[in-house]
Image (cartoon, rainbow, N blue to C red; front, side, top):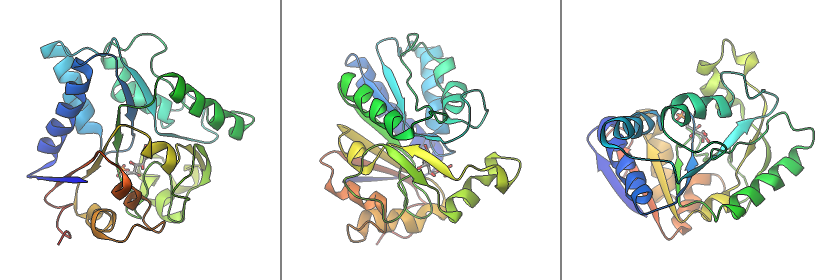
Amino acid sequence: MEIIVLPDSDAVARTAADIIEERLRRGPAVLGLATGSTPLGTYRELIRRHREEGLSFAQAQGFPLDEYVGLPASHPQSYRSVIRDEIADHVDFAPGAVHGLDGEAADPAAEADRYERAIAEAGGIDVQILGIGTDGHIGFNEPMSSLASRTRIKTLTAQTRQDNARFFDSLDEVPEHVLTQGLGTILEARHVVLIGLGKAKAAAIAAAVEGPLAALCPASVLQLHRHATVLVDEAAASRLA
Ligand code: F6R
């Protein structure tokens, strides 16, 4: 694992965007796209580079990490909507190049299998952007998730529903279930970029980077990855030894 501590969230966003830009400029790229607050600065920086510097996504594909079960694609908090609003609609992905999990699929297990196949057919993920939950989750692989897990349906913990309630009108509206790429799926990405911002993530980052490799902190599985970069601001780095 390479740990890079940067002064603030803007510097983190620029560094994450540099990694994605470098991969995009090398040719067709498959990007794994996290949602939530953490990658927003990175997406804004990529949109700026697209508009001002000609950075093109025309040869790229995107695979969101996860999706809420039960939300239609048109719901503003579905991750298909969020990815469209925060990045995809503002750059030049080709039509159909940004994929998504169908949170309304009648058979979630079949939908999860379809997504695994779609990732494989695209050639696997080149750069996977990840945020981290306060409980150490990546994707929505909550503590005690199998370290070898594949894309599947999961139940959110009370902590994660509480953390994500800020995106909804009330806690009751936060779905209880999600479809998420598994830890085994994430480990197959060729380069994983884990971003941690702010003091609230400091304990999870310390556990992921310096704690034992344990299902209690799902992000610690990245210690096994051959090319994992952890980008943190000073606040998120504050509990590293
Ligand atoms: C989002 C995701 C989650 C978030 C994590 C942190 O697609 O899979 O793991 O990255 O919950 O969320 P934020 O960035 O909102 O603090």
